[in-house]
Length: 209
Ligand code: OGA
Ligand code: MN
Image 1 (cartoon, rainbow, N blue to C red):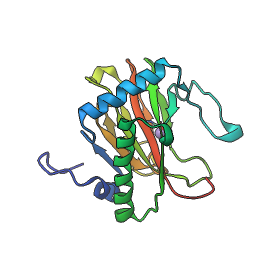
Image 2: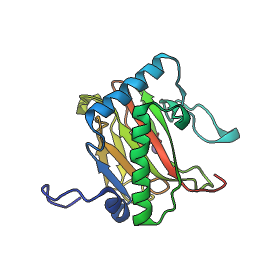
Image 3: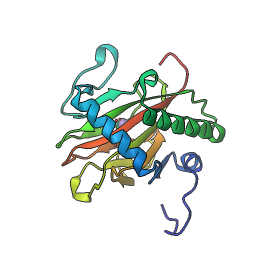
Image 4: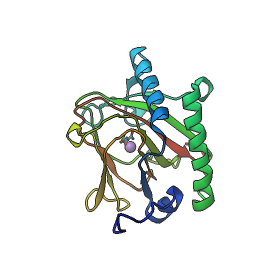
């Protein structure tokens, strides 16, 4: 962006409306993020994660050449207090986005994600082919003391539909939230050199999915 460094960050929904994406450092306070990170690791230790796949239904496959993360879906009915608070925060955001962008978002589905060292996710869009269900992506990073040489940055191409041209590169730092229009913005996770944690999810519209 060309705005001077002192310019106030526009409210998230404003930026989403203008550019189709928004990056918000410190979206969630550190203590709350640390609770979520601890729950993510405890779930991992309990064997609660599975390898993430690509595609849906009969097309679903484990493709280690495309992505190497492991996921554990959040279950609203079984959510811990910290997870419930985060989901409530996202619900406020959902309503704010609906007020600004008239997207008719009605629900959020999300999962913890862990990229083990060496993990990556090649360039992709988040909307499944032939569906309209995932409209806005929201990713909250849960990594304390992340440094540039830890890799694992999110590369987000800012021109809709493009995998060349300008991009933002986001360090997956504790508390940073990234949102973007799921069907418009190609993105990729660069190889991480240490374990990388997040809560990734999508605001959906009602429909056949
Ligand atoms: C995804 C994804 C990006 C990230 O899970 O679809 O693109 O930065 N994640 O974790
Ligand atoms: Mn994605």
